[in-house]
Image 1 (cartoon, rainbow, N blue to C red):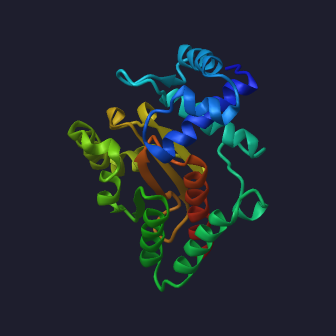
Image 2 (image 1 turned 120 degrees about the vertical axis):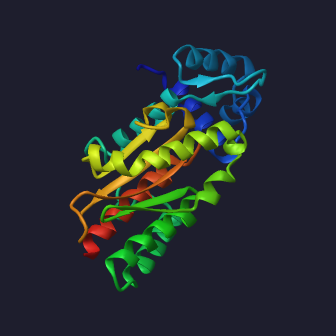
Length: 248
């Protein structure tokens, strides 16, 4: 999909501001950010909307990203890393600011202090909940460990009970799906309707595969609304997987 540099920047600004504020992003806000007229922004937003990358919810004057918009954004993060198709920059590459490295340090300290493999995985999952605000998950043998369900459901997206039901359906079927599908990449990202189960729940599943004493196909990750800080979450999930694999 070919976007102009300005269209790309506007799309990314909408995604990042929506992640932070959880409300549609309007042309006036973007006009101030890009120092152009509101009419110019509206024209560019119209193009992005025609491409299916953003949408106008109800009668709001603002726009929100679609699943396709998030996928374009995530793929761009991957491409900018100049690594394999599922890579994001390593935390020690110099690509991140202090908050990222502090979060990584929290993970490392907590994971390294545990005495058993089970405690290590649970601690890593609990830490991801705290650092990302999402639901955390990890496989321990044939069991799926979940933490932070209450954190997930306090997100504004889940005032709609039908979405809570869709998330519950996804979680009920997640463990057998992981065992059957065994996603093979170090970092796997499923956005919105890309999720193999719970397609209507409008959540993103970000998981990292690692080897553990329990299985060569162990997983750790998070489940959160499609509206989230993908760069931070992708980085921390992959880092957690790498730390766990090196811990055993």
